[in-house]
Amino acid sequence: MRSPPIDRRRFLHAGFGSAAGISVASLARAQSVPVVSIAASRNAAAPVWNLANVSERFGFKVEMSVLFTYAEQTRAAQIGQTNAATCGIDTMATVADQGITNLRYIAADQYGGQNLVMRKDLNPVRWSDLEGRTIGVVPGTWARVLFYIAASEGGADLGKIRFNNVSVGATAQEALRRGDVDGVVLFTPHCDQLVVGGIGHYPEKLDIGASSLGCANSGLLATTELLADRTFAANLMKAYLASMAEIRDPATFTRLVTNLTGISPDAAALSFRNQVFSEKIDVKAIVGAARLGPTFGFTKADASAKVEGLFDFGPLMAASGKSREELVGPPNEALTLIRR
Image (cartoon, rainbow, N blue to C red; front, side, top):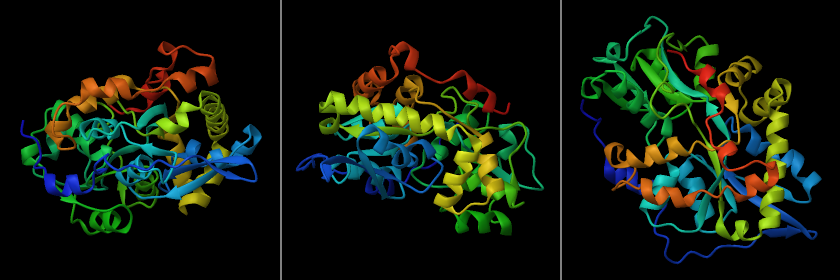
């Protein structure tokens, strides 16, 4: 099975850049209260966004820095513009591959919430049914790579599938509506909005989470400077766990995400059903993604051995009272999300 063509120049342009010359900022303070700056996009990474609503109970404030891609968010943390950032399952492979030393993966965020949306008149039941079809993908996203893995492992010849690059939002929506593509691979809440809007549907038997790496989605990374204060780092994780507990309530999730993204309550409800919020870190998926980096173009070499050293379970262990083994994912609930 052939891998899809990789535009390495475009991918590297979207990378994090050299680690040389980094100037890492300290935690800002507002009226003697620490302020944690987190880079994230306006999506359904609800436990991260909800931190601002709970953090003052734990003695600090949160400022969100809105950046669209995981690469931009990670770069902001790397150079000290922020103290933390949301990231993808493949992010730490790129961090390792580029020799970046000041970032650590500290908690997971969500499982599921990313999938293939097909035109309403098409309902493929095997991955090979996509051969000869045109699929829209967003460059540089983990959802795109996860589609490649799932389709390949499911028996499709990727060389027989046509791939068109699309952007999130109107471009993907119009491409699917006009029939320029037969399906698109997106992440929540954008994929859910397409389904609720009647533009496409989730195929009953195909799910990009049905691969050897599972449906792990986004996570949270932090700078080594923030993590050097172990007491504060543990307190940050206590707030994060409290935020996640709140967001597991569908009413709280819907209120936050509709305000944040502008999607409809119906789309928010579908988004909620299609994902699981968990702090458990899917080490297997992150290391497995790093191993596949050269195949799919987000690293130059296999970075799996280096990625092993980029997890910091300490703050999460201190905050939760659980062992490292208890905090390794995926959670059992994530398995119920996958269509097969």
